[in-house]
Length: 314
Image (cartoon, rainbow, N blue to C red):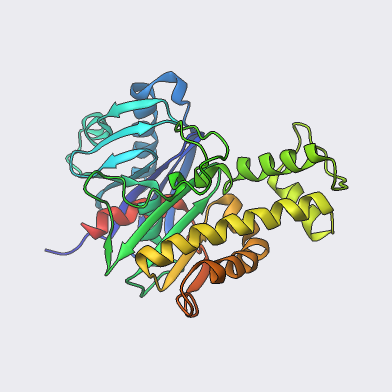
């Protein structure tokens, strides 16, 4: 039987949902975006997601093989469920089944943790093509992680493999949304970088031209660091140090050939934080352990493209 070359990919975040129609060459043939509005409840979110999928699917020039969805939270790809999605306010939701019932078209619906979909997309079309041992770190509103070992996604016995964002780097650190203190995403994320700026500013020792009000942004901080702003530079240096620690854990546990840095903050800050992270990494691992480690920025055109790869991987 011929392999169908078209798939729908859905990337669901806490604030927006992106839906694409893609082919096996990685071309995006149609796409749409809509707000997630998780406060309306999972049924409403799935209603609107299904409608967006229909709107994209009618533009397909041929048969569609299936639908892939990348979701935050703890994802059980076999059961099709999402649980412990704190940023959505969801407990246990039958996401795959809910979308399949709403579409009622017989197409398979496959789901994965969002970062697992991302690393799969990088292997198919992005920065990790040809790699069999690699890690993805998505630095955005939080910190997501996906791991591929010997060509296979690391899902784990309890579907929490690769939860790098909740690796505790500092037991006495900031309170995380998960309830723990010092999780990596409290310092390796857009909100984490802004929190670092405000904490350093409270010390009063570093001059700055940054506005510390509601208009403080990752972009302003990174631009300030490049312009020599002392406070911004110190905050970015701190982020690079924490990234180096997180990389060291991945190197010690997985010995990857490649680590891909994605996410909005990760891509934007890549050139500023990765050289700092490499220096910290070298201090934290066995001599020579990271000498040949490649670190690359994400090259995936859309996170939803990675979700489409769930269909072709099956």
